[in-house]
Length: 424
View (cartoon, rainbow, N blue to C red):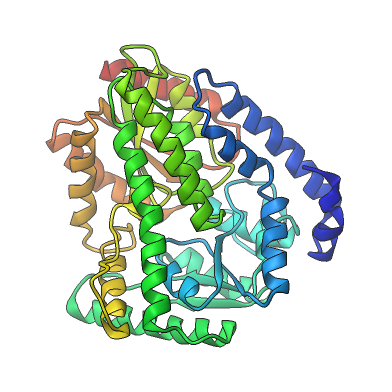
């Protein structure tokens, strides 16, 4: 990352020495896991560039937008409706997590047995290492788990926080609650941005976010070909960057990547040896730079062909209906779409079981690896039901629970290799 950004980072109150160290480690880690791959598509050069500038040029774009009067809203969850933010002229971005670099600071105020993702985002803030957090006018939390819910109370001592209440069931009264939360969020965003959301602006925003979902759906359809034309790591990277990049630019660039991918599929070209086991990941999200498990899987004779995750199909599977002509109907459409998210916070969550089985069958996978972050209770407990449902469908599953450290690499590799060999 060029040192020309030091002045900008200093204004954001980052710890420059620690931040430069983080970027150095991140660059090496990225090179080992991504740029060492053979047969990558030319279109991946854009994503390589975005990642190399993820704390540089993209942050400068956000600062320039703020100087022009725009507001930046950050979030960790796919439940926060980006359409509302865009319709009010704001910018929504994902925030830093996915590394344990700030754990020492986080554990001064959080229990050690807190979910790895929660400790990560609190640690990034307390260690002054995330320019996205420091660029935000407000951070939107949500109640998808008790750990997050309580952590946001502490986080609010260090940054402006707004929390959305996520229903825990899907009855009519729960939909009513969610609609009231969407409307409350709309009012809050209008207040932060100073802009009134209109039917016209919301319609445009819905279409914009749907277009990004459509291009990622297209990417997922193309990657499902046999032979597999793109690594799971590269598709994961595209999904991760979708939370940070400008949505219009990102959609255009991934469209170009898909054009190239389509030609590769027509030629019958693959990126892995014939006979590589097709595997699907399921469970917790993987934020940048959480690439440990995908690297292990794809270094063990398998290729990842799908992610049942918030950084995957849970975020892109459903579109918002674009049929509404007035603001009320568009809000109803938004409410319906977001209520279809099958997060493990819901009970019962039979939709997720059905979606996993259907996805595994459609992708013709040899097995499913269920990924859980350490101390993430909703997904750890729900793994039991997932394994039971997959077993009934005759689909093998390996359940893995890990954190962001590298200490268990060899242990995980042994387990994954055995699972891959068993599914051949």
